[in-house]
Length: 61
Image 1: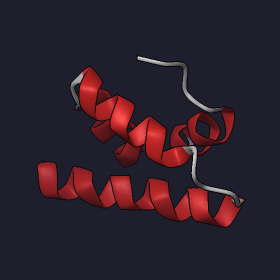
Image 2: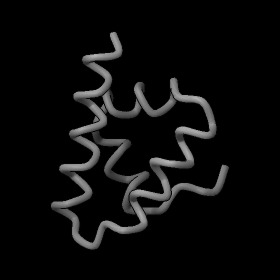
Image 3: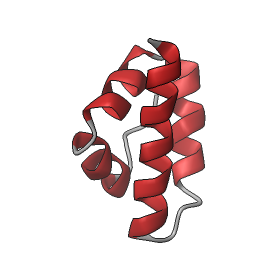
Image 4: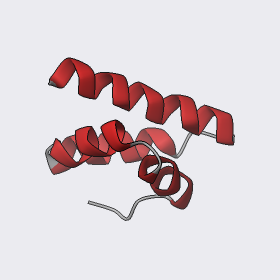
């Protein structure tokens, strides 16, 4: 798995539910998510993306 992009890691660290969800995923799925973040160009978009991961965590639990 590649290193986390800085913007993604900083935003992820601010959202516990999203971080828990991301941490629970297999490496292949984590890499898919990391690849998706490379297309995000604004801070607001990144916050929305991470908030969406948090929603996935609620479905997951």
